[in-house]
Amino acid sequence: MMTERISAENLMQHVRYLSGFEKLSGSRGAHQAVEYITDVLHKNDVPVEIYRFQEYLSNPISSMLQLQDGQVIRSRPRSFSLNLPRGLKGELVYDDSHWKKKLTPLEVSKRLAGMKGKIVLSHGFDERYAKQLEKAGALAWIQIWDSPETEIHEDTVSSVWGTPDLDSSLLLLQIPVLCVNLPDGNRLIQYAKEAAHEVFLSTCVETAVQEVEVPVALIQGESEEFVLVSGHYDTWYAGAMDNVTANAACLEIARVLQKGDKPRRTVRIAWWAGHSNGRYAGSAWYYDHFFQDLRKHCLAHINSDLIGSQLGEVATVITTGLEGRNFEKELIRTVDPQAPVAFKRFGRGADQSFWGAGIPYNLMTRYEVLPEKRTTTAPGGSPWWHTKEDTFEKVSPEVLLKETKIFLENVALFAGQEILPVDFSGYFGQMIERLQSVQEQSDDCFDFSPCIEAVKKIQEKTTALYRQLSGEARNRLVKLVGGTMNWLMQTYGSPYGQDLAYAYGMFPHLTAVAGSYRKNTDPAGFLFLQTEFQRQKNRLLTELELLEEKIGWFGQA
Image (cartoon, rainbow, N blue to C red; front, side):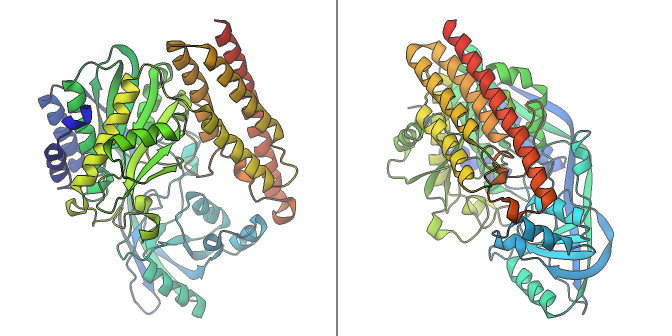
């Protein structure tokens, strides 16, 4: 098997070196990482091109949070929050509406109306909530991390995906945002409840245009169709697990593929910049500048993030689902027969910048913490995510080796398998289930039935035509249908740009009406929802109609 050629020694050598220094995009450390990546590729005769371009980056430097008695609470500012070195003073208020999650839209609106001129303390790190606070006139937001680790996790608060454009640049946040850990957050909650206490805060956030580098390796196949393999190389602090381990896996996969037989399809392996302090700006840049190439020739995007954890036990597949669960279960069992397997859907993150290009397969795999053993709300269950504790010692060589083998097996199969794997029943079934579920938990004026029937119709026509076809014609049908449906169920906007970084779930904005009723939403808010719903409904039905026509033409070809 090709996976037997993976070298555990090589993996850990790469991890040890790359986790020895910080690598925020635009820094000397980031350049040093690119030098190492390209040097390893050259030594293994892997062709690589380095793309140099500018990104809009935001580095959180320091923050101050001081109580009336002079006591200082440890904090960190958020990337892309307002730089306010002189600081401000205001009354601290605790907003538990963001924590409860079950308040009606009307109750949330009333609560937000009381935030004007206040410094708001609340749980969570939702970018949309940050903009709501700004609109409500809040002076600042203090985020409370939701699990008990004492280190403060770095993160961004920008709602803009990638480099801002003319319109999205107007949405950059204009209030300071900082984070405290849960123990200090609980102390601040009591402090806010005791009396009308004021606090002083200041932030230092360096946001500017900087040059970055993105190396892309090429494993030439027999055709111009390609599989895009990726992971970000920039890190908060040393970033051993996030994302040095994935960088090492990509290097080893490049070596093994280059030494093997020429694959049926080309493999491109990209190491992104601007993931951490640029809000996925590297992958978004690549999408913008290689859009036509991606649209015409890319069949799969296989991303890697947060692998190699010493706590990892559950082989977790994050996917849009076209290949089917049995396909991934069988693949994982070839490497780790006893591993429990779990499946998740993609959220709004992890360099998933490619939805509009019509790529039918999108997935990543990693070993995560068992649900009953989780102690943190951080992604993957790793308490050291985005902290200075994400060091070499947190990496398990055994887990990383298994993950890299599964990673390689996925890449090799999508690059080499003649007929691409499909499970139309499961793929379309998840969409229908989602639409039906939201229909049941929203106002009667939101009629999903035409959308549900249109999705069912596409499923029937695709399944019937697929059975009539053979060989490469099946793959072309899968790319047409899978690529279109992925775009529709993962986005709400144009294929030529990027949606905001808000997480709404499958069919965003269309299903944003979940839980909203005329009686529990203020009149203006409900009207806005109705307007958005109708536009999204028009979008979905029109695009499905066009897809149905293309399927019909396809069958006549």
